[in-house]
Image (cartoon, rainbow, N blue to C red):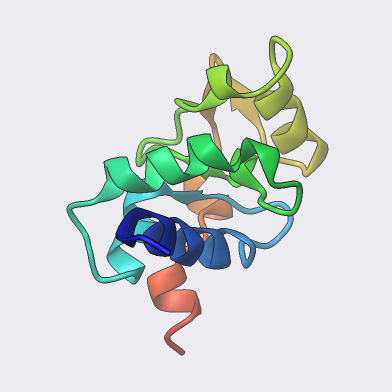
Length: 111
């Protein structure tokens, strides 16, 4: 396994822990993994995860709650539909209640 595959595997391990009805950010996952400046790499991992069924990539958004990865999902609004089916409110590609639904792995998994 090369370094990027190992990193992607760590990202997927964290992503699988995001609870139903909650979201996190690329940066929050990177911070939890000890590489705070690697949010973009987390994004690459999420983009590559669409062939892996058990990865809830729709629950990972940018730090402002924007659905920046939506174009990597099949269909026009699949990412939004998946989030809305979990009770998350979205308007104009942005989560409206981000503070209420944000899951911080650094806080949640280090307790």
